[in-house]
Structure formats: C-alpha cells, structure tokens
Picture 1 (cartoon, rainbow, N blue to C red):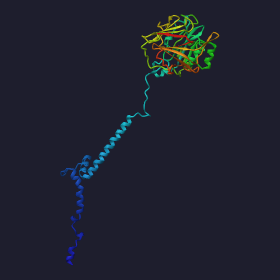
Picture 2 (picture 1 turned 60 degrees about the vertical axis):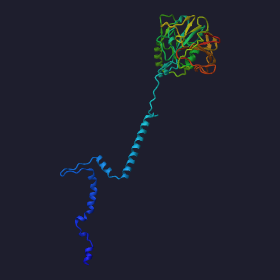
Picture 3 (picture 1 turned 90 degrees about the horizontal axis):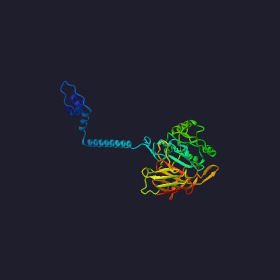
Picture 4 (picture 1 turned 120 degrees about the vertical axis):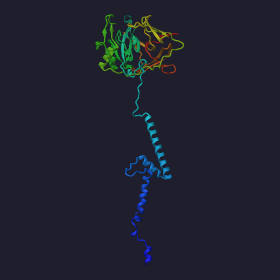
Length: 400
C-alpha cells in the first residue's frame, strides 16, 4: 500500500514553480516579439516606445515564407489597383465634358451683306437702306462708296435711282435722299431693312404698310436729316449712318433677320480677263453705265453718263467688286416704272475679270435673289461691295 502511495503524484503538493511552467512558457512566447525588435534596456532606464516602422519590421520578420509571399501579392494588387484608378481619373479629366465644355466663339465670320470678315454680332445688326437719287443735279453723290450693296433701277422718266444698304459698313454723309418706289421695297424686305426716304409714290407708301417695313420717312422724322445749303431743293436732303441708327434705336429697330447672297471665301483673279468692259444700257446716254475692270484692285470702275462716277467727299471713283446685271420686264404705269421682281430670268455676273451667265430666281416679294449657273450650281459672289442693276432683255454687253 505504501508503494502505491509513492507511485501516485498529488498535484496539489507540487511545488509552486512547477505549477507556473505553463505561465512561464506563454510569457516567453509573448516576450519574443519585444526581444527581437528592441535592444536591451540598461537597468534603471525606461524603455522607449517603438515607431510604427520598427513594429512593422519586427512583425514582418516573424512571418513565414508563405505569409510573406501572400503579403507581397496583396501589396502588388493594391499598387496596381491604385495606378489604374489614377490613370482613369486623369484620362476622364482630359476628356471634354458635354456639360462643362466651353465653346469658343469665332473671332470673325463672313458678313451676310458683303462676305467680308466681321465680328459675329455685326450680322445681327439692323440693316439700313437709303434711297439716293441719280439725276445730273444730284451728282456726285455721297455715301454710295461705303454701302455694302447698291440696287439700281429706273424711278421715272428714264432717271435711275439707288437703294444703298448698310450693315457692316457706314458713312458719315449720305445723299441726296429722295422718295421711294415699290420695287425698291422688294429688296428692302428681302434684307429685313429699315428704309430712309423722303416720301414716295402712293403705291410705295401703301406697300411699306402692307409689308410691315421699318419706316424712317423724313417727313415723320425730320431730326434724322438735314437740308444742306450747297445743293438746291429737292437735291439737298442728307443724313448719316449715325443719325439713322439713333432713329432705329428709338423706334426699336435693332436687328435684321435675312439671308444674304452666298459669298465666296476670297477673291480669285482670273488668269485671263474675259470681261474688261461692261456696258449696261438702261435708258439713255445720261444714265447708261460703263464698268471697266481694274486688275490692280480686282474691281470694276464705274462711269455713268460718259463720266467716272465719284464720291463727293473723297473724290474717288466708285469701284464695286461684283456687278450683277439682272434682266427682267419693265412696264409703265402713268409716270412710274413697273418691274417684274419675282419669278426667274437671265443674269450676268461680273467679278474677278470674267463674266458668268446664269439665271436668277425669286419666288416671293420678300425672297432673296438666288443666282445659278448653267449647271444649276449657285454662283457665289466675291467678298466686298456689289452693285445690282435691273436691265431689260439685251441690255447688257461686255468685251474682253
């Protein structure tokens, strides 16, 4: 029995040191991290806390090979993902956004009136038309050289009269201003223009109201005109672009909506001139017109009544870039002319030193003239001032 007692170990009687073996082993394992990552601290000194990088280094040393490999793969995936995200953000930022993209307006565009380069807002301005007479007592006129477009036809008695249009151009002295006729108003309407005039024929005054044309009649607005002492009445009424624009602003005439001629991008002088001299047989020697091509300026010098037609103030000869001869019918109603202003007919256009024969089309009173060549293509007008004259059949000839 005594031997049996000695063979059985009573754990309650085991020394304290033996009972603490498991605790000591755990402590040793826990201290391993600190022993591997910290230097021994001399007695009496307080141990320093490890920085994050040292803690990470110590932690990394305790990883096995598989753990380190897995960690490396995770890091590579994270870096690759971050790089891809950064690339996508930068690429998207570089793309123009449909919501935030700023549209830059062009600095200049072609003028609808002349085809010259102008600021975009100029094409929104009110077009101003002025009736200017052409009797011998009215010559030399003022302001015709500055007009963007000039329309010429017979008023009565074989005497021609002009409708001068201004939008991207202006003049500080325009006249003599005279009365209006119905067919000039067709052109006014096609440009949505305001019309400056001194009265008019009964049919013309009625047509201004019928077509709702913006009216600047001198009789109703004398402050925008003046009667000069250097000319005898009725050839002495003058105005200016500034005065007429002020009147338009007062009346609320601030914008014109219209379709102009189709213009070429630039002038292209012909290598061989085929239309050096152009003759327009309008009514009589006092009003028939001769144009002579000037290769130096690529324009047509205008003469009327056998003499150069000049501007009163500058003394320079009138010289449009394009001359448009429109053949149409003309009848007489009392003392007044009656022109065929709609439909179609022949046209000859002179520009760049050559003549282009074609047809004109104008379906309605407010329609713009459209010019087409023999193949049916639109004839483009060169940039600059253009003159249009109404003639009857056979009224235009030219020579090289």
